[in-house]
Length: 435
View (cartoon, rainbow, N blue to C red):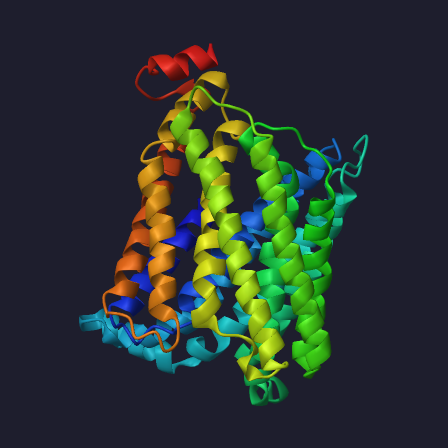
């Protein structure tokens, strides 16, 4: 739920920006969605997947809870840098208080403190991943765990750069135009995307009802992104064009292999006869996310190759809609749709009720997420000259889809109260499956 609230806040801030709220920092929706929503979700589920692959026990619950709380709290403090400038515009005492905060030490100190806390949280995530499954009977598909570990290293580098910038470290501030592409690549692709791709190797067949079959396309997907993202980030960090371009090409190959792996999983999928809305929201959301990922990575790689490790090697308006909304946000929503009634609290009866709830408005939510992504993308493309309503309309569609998904997830969680169902009788289809 914490990740969902971050995503909802990101959607609302995007709507506000599309409506002309210039007081909000342009990077705020991206930060809320990635550092807030995606990082919190990853901190919560990554140790679980590692333990599942090793057929062992997850890390201690206190360590996992501490990792989630620290990452979320740190991301929230950093987000104040994008919110505080808007507070003086509030009416009455709230505006006066906001003006004091925006001009006081909080505006300068809290964001870098938040970045430091976020880095501590990432360290706790790494410790939880290392502790998960250590007593397991086996280690299936170790390439997934390797991908997770390299992803943690990537975000440590990217988040450190951002924290130094927030703290006003002169060498970073002076060269931020050149360091920004490295920060974006290590976080968006080297961390969040690498974790999702590594997870989809076993999660996507599970959602689609197929077998988890080792394929070369899966190896190319993880290796391409795991090797390419740090190469591209290092090349951009030090202005090494050939290295950055080579890494970007590897990432594009990894993204293409991810798409090929998804196609092969679809061909071997099972056929569902019950809980169709729930299955549609989870499976179609994951597959649509993969399609946006391929598009976004190819465009990001093209910018690096053409930009030759310069400040133009990253264009947030050009790639952020496919990568942040269509790929990351949509995959998070689809994932919690599948996981809540699969590994969440409750028994078979409660889980069957949750599937019914989480499958509501599945088609409308999918249309909202993907149509909204396309509209935001079209409206943000530099030089496109779109109508002024395009971005606000797309952002509104995305936000409504996220809001509906968060509300339904909350309703699904409330169905489990002390082990007893707290909902009306099951429909015939859901009751038949659970019984």
